[in-house]
Image 1: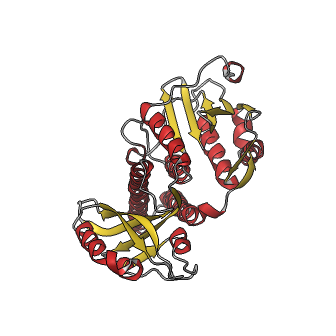
Image 2 (image 1 turned 120 degrees about the horizontal axis):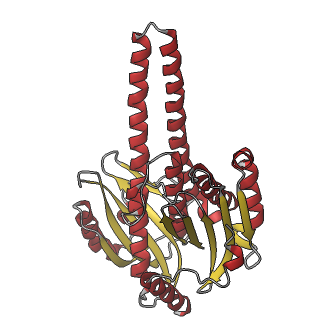
Image 3 (image 1 turned 45 degrees about the horizontal axis):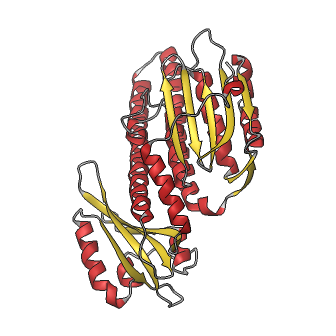
Amino acid sequence: MNFLSQKRSRPIAQESVAEKGATQSNQAAASASTQTIGMGRWSYDTVAKTAFLDQNAKRLLDLPDEYRAPIHFIQNFCTPSARGLALQAYQECLSGKPFTMNIDLIPVSGKPFNSLINGVPELDENGRVTGVSLSFQKIINGQEINGSYPEQIARLKTQNKQLIAFSEHISRQIRTGTSNLALTLELINDTDSDQEKEELVRNMNSISRGMTASVEELNQMIQFYRKSPNLLAEVSFQNALNKATTKLGPLLQDSDTDIFSDFSEIPIIKYHGDFLEKVFTTLIKHAVLYKIEGRRPALDIFTYYEDQKQCLLIKDNSQGQLLVPAHVWGSSQTQGSQDDLALEFAGIKLQIEALNGSIQVEANSGIGTTVRIKF
């Protein structure tokens, strides 16, 4: 299988109507007089009585990195004239009603700036409010908010929901692992057979590795969201791919995997080097681990431009079943068993979207999987 020789004669799948609208809106926003600088986030957990303020929020409010998030955001940072209306909206949010409003915030420097604030209630699995998340974006030039903001807000809401679903998925895995470990220990204590004990110890090791992988994936996600705005650098696609194939060397050799790549159209991108390597590693691993019996694994990987966007395509000849948790990808995606690789897929999607990118996946049973990433 070599799709590279056909990539110029075969059109890439057409962009959806929603994506075209988003692209046109983004282009209009870029030329509009109203500009935005970053987006910060403050959240409050009503159960634990703790607050969180991300690094971008601290920059917007001129706060030091070590500043401890206050539990009363509106009282601390809203102008007196806007405080009453903001508090009313916040109280309604605590009751489950989201809000969006344009008010002035006061940073430590003392010079107020106009901001668009989006408040979203955080719910548990029973639909009860367990907290509130406020995202705010600085607006300059005092212009009227343009049409791109609702799309940005909708995107943030989606990302927040997916992050919550991702963390809940990991939480369930850890709880399950803890229960299995406890049960295994009981069985070890109850048996007198050395053979059974050895088997149970191996099972414990397997459970422990799974729990460690889950915690590590969550930790990587947290670190990524904290540092993502500051780690962009020029990255070579070929170098990132080389690192991934080196890491997967034994797996690729044992499976006799073919990888065809062409990065001539976009050889370098400003991105996260480690994350791009992880994307390659995860998708190549998927192609090999879920190959069709008797078929030699093969991947085509290349970069291209579409609608003035930098894109990456990775196509394989695997079973064509994408193993990703349903609550992260949505019901439109093919579902399979939720293993460690599924968790990696879910993390990749969230991190790509956190960097204002998008990912499309086509999984065709018996044919293979195609992944398209827009940066």
